[in-house]
Image (cartoon, rainbow, N blue to C red; front, side, top):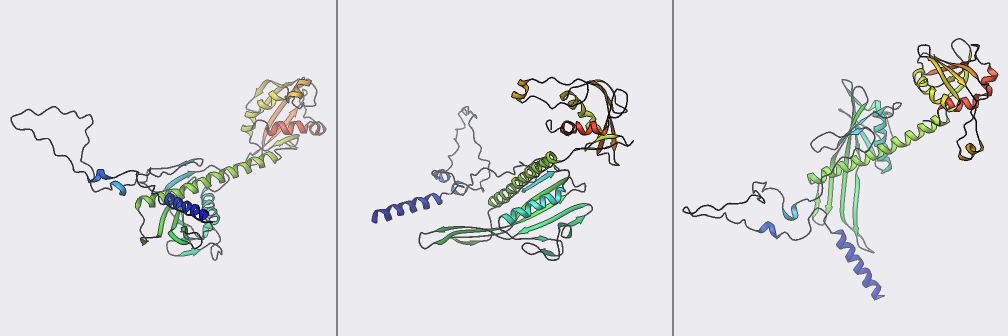
Amino acid sequence: MSCRVFYLSLLALSLTACGSVNNKQAEGGFDYQHKAEANDLVIPANLNKPKQAKTFFVTDKINHQGPVGKDMDIRAPSLVMPIAASSRVVDESGIAIIWFDKVLEDKDLFEFIERVVKEKLTEDNITYHYIEEDKEVTLGKVIEGATSLKETSIKREGIKTAIIESDWYHNEVDVGWIFTDIQFSKSLRFRYQLLAKPHGRSVSLRVSLVDFLQTDETGGSKTMDPIDKQRAEKAMLNELIASVDYNYRVQQRADRLTRANQKLVTLGKNVEEENSYVIEMGLEDLWGNMPLFFEKHGFTITDLNEDKKIYFVDFVKPDSSVWDSIWGDDVPTIDVSDAHYQFRLTPLGELNHKTAVTIYNAAGEPLPLESLERIFPVIEKGLSFRDVF
C-alpha cells in the first residue's frame, strides 16, 4: 500500500512539473542578460587603428526597453488561416479578421456566415446576444422581439453589418487528488463583427476579445498580455473558419446528392407542341455538352446549324461484346434504327433554364411519343450527364 502511494505521489509530482512548463520562455539559463558590454578598444593616437572585419558584427542599436531573458515571448506569431474556399486575409495590423467571397450561389453569404457563428457558440454551450447601435436584443435560449438577423442588423448606405457577443468561455485547471483546488482560472468573452459589401458577395468576419478575467496563485487580473490577446482572437477566428469550411463541404455534398436524385430529363413538348425531351439545363450549356452524349451512344455528328441549334447525326448501334460487360465498359444502347436524325434544341420558359430536345427522323418528322418512351431510360441517363459531371 505504501509503495502504491509513493508511486502515485511521484506521478502527481511529474504531472505538476509538466504542467508548470512555460511554453513562452526559452529553455536554459539567462545569465547573458546580466553580462556587461565590453568596452571599445582604445587605440593610442600615435598608432594605426587595426583593420576590423564586420562579417559577424552585431549592432547594439536595438530596443533596449524590450523584454529579455525569461520575459521574452519566443512563440511563433499567430496567423489567420484562410482554409475555407474563397477566403482571404488582408494586412490589418494584427487584427483577427478574414474576408469570405461567395461560394454557394443559392445561399445568402452573410446569413450563411452568421449561422456558422451561432452554431459554433451553441455547440460550445455558450449563450450570445446581438448588439446594435442604440440597444441590445437578447438572443440565445429564448428569442424575444427579434426572430431573424434582419431585425437585428445595422444598415449603412447599402453595407450590412451585425455584431454578436458571446457569454464567458471558462478554462480551469484543478490540482489535488481527493480534495481539488482551482490552481488556475481563465475566462474570455468575444465579439464577432460581420460586414457585407453592398453587392453581398463579400463578407468579413472579425473576432475581438472584449472581456478577460484570470485568477492564479498570484491573484486576479483583468488585463491580458497583448500577444496572448491576439493569439486568443486568432485562435477563435481559425475555429470559425474551419467551421465555415466544414459547412461548405456539407452543403456541397447535399447539393450533389440533390442533383444526383433530381429528374433532370422528362417527357414534354417544345414550343411547337411536338413531343420532346425537356432538360433542366440552359440552352447554351446543353448545346456544348451534346457532343459528349453523341459520342457515348453511337451517334456521329455529320453537320450542325449553330444558329438554329440543330445537330445532324448518323446513328449506328454500337457493337458490345462479352468483354465489355465483364470490364464494365458496355453502354446502354438506344433502341432505334440505324438512320439519319436531327436533334433540335429550343429554349423553354421565360428564364431559359429548360431546353426542349426534339428528335426528327430522316423524313423530318418528330419521333412519336411511344418511341420517346421506349428509349427514355437511356436518354434520361445520357442527357443528365451523371457519368460525366
